[in-house]
Length: 216
Ligand SMILES: [Mg+2]
Image (tube, rainbow, N blue to C red; front, side, top):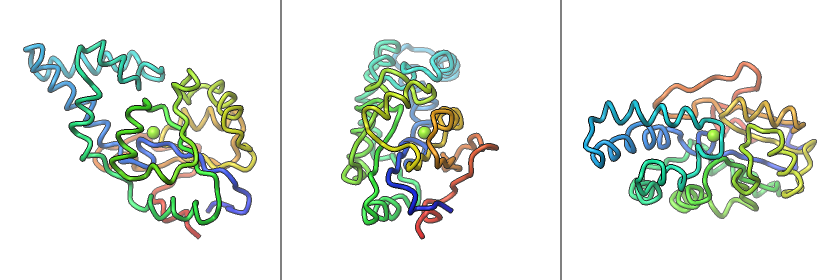
C-alpha cells in the first residue's frame, strides 16, 4: 500500500488519526457544555446549543484548538477539565505496532498537529506514545493551522523534511488538500476517526482503516 523504500519521513496527525476522536467529540460537545450549564445555571440543551455555535465560528482557526482561548471565552479551566478526563483518551487499534515499525525502519517520526501543546502533552503522556516521536510540531508554533499552505511552507523550514520522501496521515480532508497542494507526495486519509461517531469520508485521498495495513 505504501512504498516504504521511497519514504524517510512519517508525518502523523494526533486527534482522530493516532487517537480516537471520540474523546474530543465527547469532551467538547457533551462534557464541556455540561460543566458550562452547571456553572451558568442554564439547561444543558441551551448550553450545548450556545457552545456549538461558538465552536463553529472558530472552526479552521487557531482559536479552535487554543485551550487558553476557550478557558477565557467560557470562563472555565479547560486544561483542568481535560486532565480530569484524561483516562478516557484512547489509541486507535494498531498504532503502537505501526510506530514500532517506523522506529525499526529508521524513519523520522514527526507529530504534526493543530492541537494545543498542553493537550498534546496530556494525551501523549497518558497514552505513553511520547517516546516514539523525534519531533512534535503544533500549528501554534507556526501561527497557522494545518489547513493553510503557509503552515506547510513554514513546517518544511522548521522540520527539514523532504516532501518528496514524506508520508502524511490525517483524518481531515481540508488538511490533506493543503498538504497535497504544498507537495507532500504520499497522503493517506484516516477513516473511522471516531469509534462512535461517523465522520467525513474522503473521495480524494486513499483511506487508511487500520494501521496494521501499513506494516509490510
Ligand atoms: Mg485530526
